[in-house]
Every structure is written in C-alpha cells, then in structure tokens.
Length: 153
Picture (tube, helix red, strand yellow):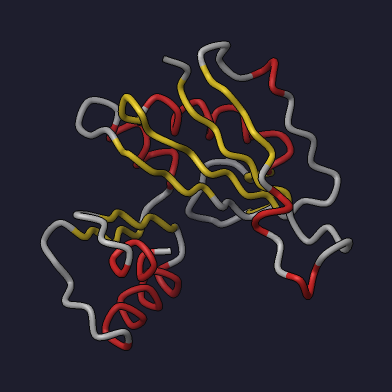
C-alpha cells in the first residue's frame, strides 16, 4: 500500500505494523521500486491501537487503509486481537482520524466476519466494495470483504 500511495502521488504516507519483518519489507519495497524515502513517509513498528490513540491529537488523514489480521496473539500486545471482536474499536479510532472528506478502506479476511454498521457512528456512510477489490482469480471464492467508510457531511 505504501508503494502504491507514493506512486499515486500521495504527499505523505504512514505505514504501521506490529511486526518488524513487515515494516522492513515495506522499506525494502520502497527501495526496490526506486522511491526515495521522504521525510513525510513514516514506516512505524508499533501496536496500531497505541499508534491510533497517540495520533488522535496530531494528524488527520485523507485516506486510511485498514487491513488487519484475522487474529493475532503477539506477546507484544496486552491481549489477543480478533478482528471479529475488536474491529469496532479499531474502526472508530480510524474514523476519528479522517480528514473532512477522508475515506477509510477496511478489508477483512475473516470468513465469518459480519460488519455491524449500527456499532459504528451514525455520522459515517458505508459502502461494500468487495466486488471492486476482488481479482478475477478469486471471484466467487470470498477471499475477503472490503468496505469504503466515509464521514457524512
């Protein structure tokens, strides 16, 4: 996502992952694609919940791509993460960081996941974009679900 953001003309990007291997891969992919890592591009190894809480008073984002794991029980976290149980808090924190016309893209790989729109703010609109984000190789196989979430004006 970071390379696509830079290639697409993003003025800045922020990548957050708890796993250092993934943030190292992001740095490597930036180099492989011959992008210069700009000061405005942040690649952060941290718990996304900690990052999102700290970010609340600092920045607003035009686009957030939230692609959490289905489950994680990393020793670096206080409790295990399950997207089925913990998505509400995660999405609320992301929504709070959206700029005025910002968009949150939320992708989920859990096969039993159900997005309960009533659990999110009445101030957001939600559009299922799964069909648009599923490659032809996976049509009809339900590899993931994907939504566009935006603040209502």
